[in-house]
Structure formats: C-alpha cells, structure tokens
Image 1 (cartoon, rainbow, N blue to C red):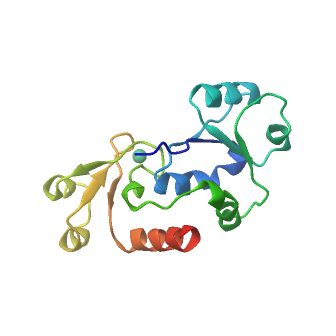
Image 2 (image 1 turned 60 degrees about the vertical axis):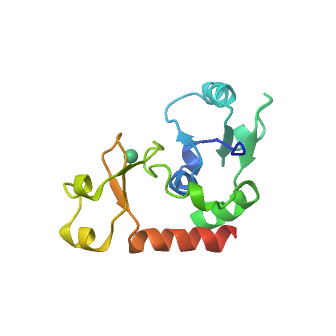
Length: 153
Ligand SMILES: [Zn+2]
C-alpha cells in the first residue's frame, strides 16, 4: 500500500479530525502542549500539521503544514481536498472519535452492544477497543460515505 499522509491537527482545526479518520487517515489532536512541542511531536511522527493559526503558518522551523482558512467544516474539507484521497478500503478503518484502528467482531459478540433492530438489519460489525464503540454500516454510515464521495471523487 502506498504511504498515506498522517496528520496532526491544532485545536482550532479539530472539527476535521473525525472526517479525516473516517477517510482512514491517522489523525491526532493534542491539546495543552506548546506549539514548539506540537511541532516536535509532528516531526518525530512524520505528521503534517493542519492548523488555522498564523503562528503555525509563519513559524520559522521547517515542518510540513497545511493552513486552513475557513471556520466551516465543509469548506475546511474542501481546502483539504488536494491532500486527500477517497479509497474504499480505508473507509471506517479508524474510530472517528479517538483514531484507534477498528476490529471486526462477529454478530454474536456485537449483540451485547447493539439494539435488536440493528441486529436484524446488519451482519458486519466493528469495534473500537479503546472507547468500546461498535460500528455498523447503517443509514448514518451511508450518509457519511455519500458526503465523502461527493466531496472527494
Ligand atoms: Zn474509539
């Protein structure tokens, strides 16, 4: 597989985190660290810093950065578009809440976590072992996918 970008968002761009993770991008948001430390972590982990801050944009250190102008999520995604790819096999690979990789679980195991109605409709489930959320390809999933396809393909 080709190497994909990894991101580090500053807090002012953190709305993007969920969406980048849904696309399968390894995306971190670290709060309460100085800009210098943030840059060092990003450099060490080979992450591109995504930020709305002019301090990041104009910082004299050499590091990869994407400056985001808009405050609206849809426009922010548009601004990120040149750096993103929609690839089916990456969709819903990561937990949108905390960036952990998801794991497939059997329907039998998922039954403990999901409503009966859902179990009747779906057979494929994934779990995040960090936060315990269980995901399945319901209508919410389809809407998210449509939005991403709309935007990026
Ligand atoms: Zn999670």
